[in-house]
Amino acid sequence: MEKQSFAVRLQGAIFYKSLVLMRKTWKVEIEGQEILDRLYAENKHCLLCFWHGKYIPIFPLLKGYDACVITNQSERGNVITEICRKFGFYNAQIPDEPNRNSYNLMREAMSAKNMCGTASDGPLGPACQVKSGVVRIASALGYSLLPVSVGIRGKIVLKGRWDLREIPLPFAKVCMIFGEPIDLPPNLRGGQVKVWEERATKEISALSIQAETKVEKNKRRKVNATIKGQVS
Image (cartoon, rainbow, N blue to C red):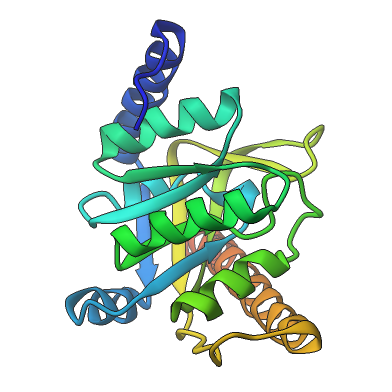
């Protein structure tokens, strides 16, 4: 990991500290963590797949796991690298445009850790659509895809961004849900990649809806309880 500039290290430190402080105020619910923990304990090779717009709360919620976060080579990627370092994650930066060098870098990064994670529709979209390269590399290296998503009540949504980035506010309700691992056949090619790409896209999207529904349902339950108490 290359040494970052002072500006990047400062941005990373501020972002890290803000997340650590906000995490202490969040009301967190996690479903399916036993799936992650089982794979982690058994040293299974798995690639956590999530949407680019929802990655922010994932950093503090998964702190403590020995994992590699895969990002792109850019100024923003440099900041994310610094944040990863502070949370204890290994980081690998891959060029935006897929080529043999990026494939080799990703292979090297994923070979270093049993658990890796990446925004599967990043870094430039289209949003909520798993990239074929994610499926190809996981298949080639024998990694299962582990879909995960979050729902947030109490957030800022950056509507001007392609990914509709979600930033949890202090005292937000955050729900993170893991799906079952998707075991890929080895060395997928052509149309086979598309089939698994679509399956992974559907599963991550379904988890996103499930997580968002859960935080909103909890909100309605709280409102109904308040109304009932007032009537009584």
